[in-house]
Length: 333
Length: 107
Image (cartoon, rainbow over all chains, first blue to last red; front, top):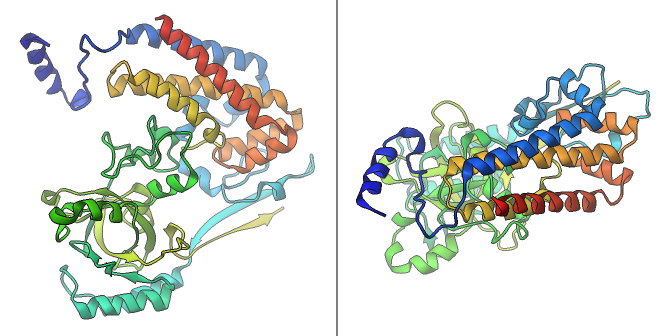
């Protein structure tokens, strides 16, 4: 690449929209006329839509009646999760309902309401126990505080959670967590395939531990759940990291942890999926969009205090996700 | 947001994205192409599904799809009505993938 091109590149990179996203087209990459391809595929799409509207007229009417733009179905509002009444009283369901139970006789109508209630008693109990154990200011916990918290978590949640496991500790266990983006789960992953909170976007670079699966064909629901409930920790600040990083890296990769909001008792089982944030941010941990939502930091500044503990679960029995969550449905005819 | 049949199309879309990324386009350009591909697959799969269903079942499918497109229960319902629906969707998406790869290679 010549000096002139480098100069142009520098000028272009100053533009906010393409900063960090511009890739050099050099003479070694295969030729690709983007605009030509885009026009071709757009025509194919338009043709596909026209054919659909012709062969599936009734469906087209349905979508129009419900103000649904099929092309934007992936961005459908989260309100769909709570179940909303469709004009005409037709069958509704939530993602958690047993669809087989809902198959009605042709003329019958059911209204299904799904609600997701957090079992608040457990959170309150945990909160009342740990409130007395925490220091008044945000600082590293001492031995007595750690022992007290480990005992409280075991007695209330039934989870063996430790601040030190297999001789390993994090650099900090009581600090500030901030919101992170989704991570790429496999080569070719796309933000549209992520379940929720797609508005948080996907990190342009891979997480510190790479992909969650080697390929899309190997990608499993387990991998999906790990990315959903991941946190970032400052692995590079762990004591002895420089000497033991090879061993520590493998030990920390997708290590199961308990994340607790010490102000509300909201808790979630997560995995360590990335390294960070940078020390200059003033934060010690990062949380996936789902994690931040579950522990009550999904809105506003998207940051707050957390306690992080390793979970001692050698048989991998404790599922990832929010603690003590009850979902129920009720029928009204 | 996920759609109930995403697990059937992810591999093929992944293949297409890997192919597109060989050409070193910007992230913005890549996202634009992925959006178009998603739309094409979306309409073709829905067309296929609706063609497999009786009228009454189409209503049921559409009602649930509109409210919760991610609902895996929809797939269980479709399997009752058309036992080989997953294979049919997979074949359709495979066909679309090959069509698009051909278009890209010809350009």
